[in-house]
Length: 151
Image (cartoon, rainbow, N blue to C red; front, side, top):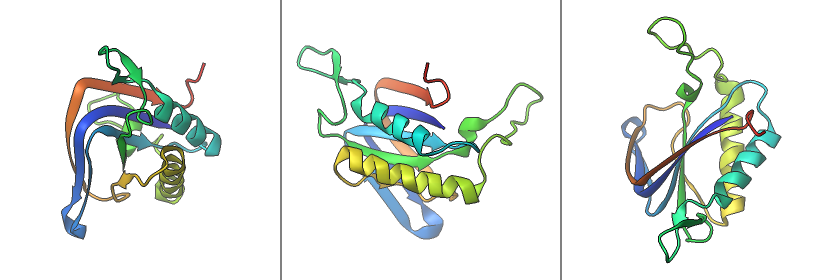
């Protein structure tokens, strides 16, 4: 499982075909992708690390607070392109990314686990949809996590 964490002052997602929009204020925009073999252990590790990650400023301006500490919000977007293979040619291959029957239940489980850990609902995109994501990256702070690189 891979996740891109972006600290934001605001973020939103729009799916015009579904007339759907979701947004947050101060918090984290999470782009998440899954590969075959990912399981609840990968999800739980990423969720625990994400909500506890100290990437928000304290009173001294030092990144020493988590999204929980600052009462921040979270917006989760599924993104299979996080598993793009780019070593050969100029057209990325996405063969490592899980297909919908595997990835969508993992995405829904991830969102549920994140809501439990955060203690409130998270914003969501629509799995597999053509989404337009807007954000104001705060810092900027952008962090890449891979559940297979825990050590």
